[in-house]
Length: 162
Image (cartoon, rainbow, N blue to C red; front, side):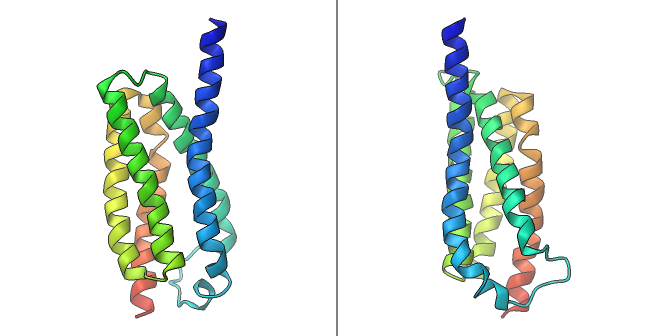
């Protein structure tokens, strides 16, 4: 039992660190543009203040990590768990790619197209997680909601600045 507890603690830590690392990469790509390029964009009235994004994304990455843990805990030998983990990895890569496209390359239209693909992948990941663990799926709901909002915001930032 003690080995199982240690294994689960390690799984939880790794599961949380993976999305937080993606978030750190995203932050490195974002920070140089926030006070320059992004600050100069025309923004819609519903654009949140800049300070809100860091805490929201940190919380979302934490929820993603806990969700990954609940799936991983079911065992990577299971096909449904493998599928959920692969989709999880794909959506995380797409998450970082969006940040790269939007903030680093300053390509709002390309980022908008990509965020639609990201949204679909998040939805697919969430469905896959629900099949493995209800708790894992539920923890993805705030992320899907936030990316839905981010998609609308991305669209308006593109349209207001072309």
